[in-house]
Length: 369
Image 1 (spheres, helix red, strand yellow):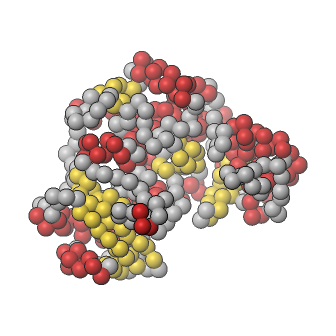
Image 2: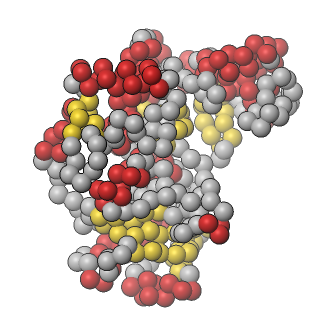
């Protein structure tokens, strides 16, 4: 798992768990025998921490010095104002955490203040100052219980040598830029879908990118059939020069996997249309709410919509790409059965159930846990 974290730089966290949490699915697709509790163990041991890297992500703890500069939801100015506007609340919250250890917003009485939420409504001042303290570096996230966050002093969460390592802010920004190029592999200069948000203002980001190219850390490359230059980390050029042979396995890809960040690249390079439809109204969805792309070898061959529910996995639907016939693809049926068995173990499920109109797939991929 730590090898995957180091290779990617970070893995996006998302609490939605209808088919498995996003970070668990990312690891399940790459780590044999992965169990959903393993990432929680790394978190509890302090080997990974939460940081904003495109979105809320888990990052190896050794990288903390490069993530001290935190934007937060609305930028450092907003969070500094939240502490100033709610000074009395902020003082009480910090004193209790110092005295009692990790606490969540539920451990405090709700308090009102001038800080407003996204909708212009008064925000719980306790929640506002807890988040603001993470931006200013006073406290950090100790653990999660579902979507509930527990906070503690940074010195109780991270090794002293990590906390003592001071990295200039400019180097932190360069590191974050490289981290996002590393996570995807073939991003263009503009990124995709907010890839470079919350690093710095666009003008500063463009200057940092220019420096990284001039320094040779990022290398522009041309990809046949893809418009515009793509940027690759210098140490990963060897992967383009001598790519490994694709395996004959099947993997289910999480909706927020970094592989899917650039939908335009997927369309041009793999002829695969990807849209996450979770925010769409049901009648507007072409596929479904939480659908996982299916990879076989080096091809996107379809989509699957599984649900984990009380000891079972229900497959609500499967869509195959045009021109892909599961029976005629050499090795696919066995690989798909293996992937479904692995997913059942990952889901801690005892049985696999198929929607009524998937009788063909049920017969083809009939499997046991």
